[in-house]
Amino acid sequence: MRRKSNSSVQLALAALVIALVPAAAVLAEDAPSAAPQGTPLTNKDGTPLQTLDDVVVTGKLNSLSGIRKAMVDAQDRFYNRWNELNKDPQWNVTCENIAPTGTRLTKRVCDPQKIADEQHDQAMYLLGMGGNVRFTSAEEMRRVVNPELKERMLKMVKADPELMTALLEHAKLVQIYQDTRKKKFTGHLFVND
Image 1 (cartoon, rainbow, N blue to C red):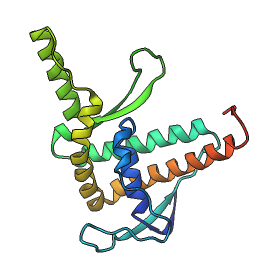
Image 2: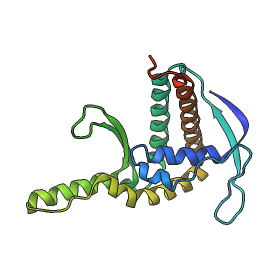
Image 3: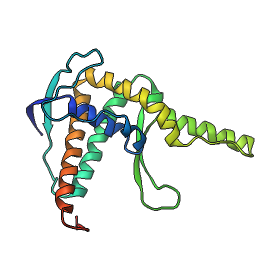
């Protein structure tokens, strides 16, 4: 990997949202998006965020499937580092591929342990109580849990360069994927990846 200078934390903040919510599109509505290049992002108090090196990712990125694999690897590096630094086990994040009911198509879902524990507790209560008990969906739990998780991650990203690098790698790969997908599908209904 090579590093390219003169980039800012903009990509990292956008990537954090992408890394946090692969399955929870609800948060994307209020998530900060990357500002155009050259537009500085600021902290809540109005002070500009510091600039960091941009990460240029190279490798087998000539196919959409290759880029998707690299995105998953970068996301895994981010969450592995997060889990190493995080002191509270309920905020450790794990990812899995799940197939929603009624389909064989899987999607990648990354959630903190807090959500898995709550789902377990609800299932045990449902088994013990029987009858009509309202079960809170994982999406509803994410709406409640993810803002705090995002806040915790932002603090950690600002404090740890390795975590920031993993985040920047993921953001760059997302950008490469979107650009490549747009190019490949321009004028085509189907693309042989």
